[in-house]
Image 1 (cartoon, rainbow, N blue to C red):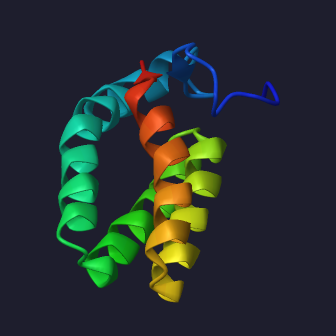
Image 2: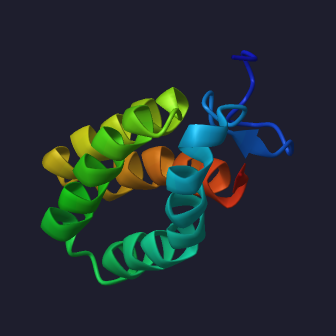
Image 3: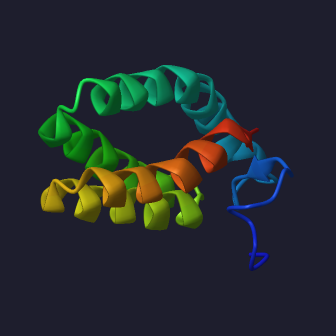
Length: 106
């Protein structure tokens, strides 16, 4: 994985993207990203940090399973930040996650 993948403007593809058997799983996952992102942003805007933590936890698990280890790492950081209930720490963890999610493609 490139060292600056979270700051890049390049599309992010699953490490399983070239596996034709896995493509049928990746398409619905990628298609659901905008909805997941909307939920995360709504939770942040309303400061419902427990819900945001749960959403981050779910992404952490899904990221690795779908071949996006960086998604898991970024979601884990957001999950930790939500436990702290520190708005600045949450924003610092949320911004790279949002950027990464916006670049996920099949």
